[in-house]
Length: 66
Image 1 (cartoon, rainbow, N blue to C red):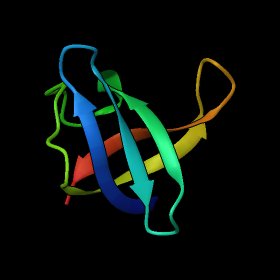
Image 2: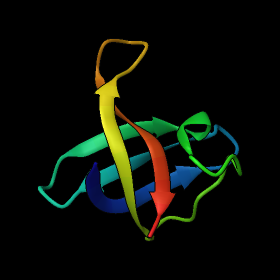
Image 3: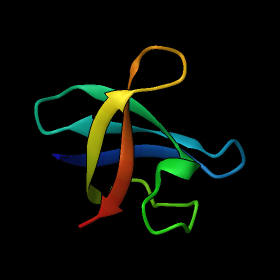
């Protein structure tokens, strides 16, 4: 698991950016939000699982607010 902050989340497009504590900026889609709500506020501390996404780039999955 990686920890960081939800940098931004666009509810209309259903995607956002997660910044790890190490400073890496990773994309995530609303279906990657673990609680099924499909939304998460920007600025919240969160954890997630890093994996390769559909486009072959690293993304965050199983995103959960702390």
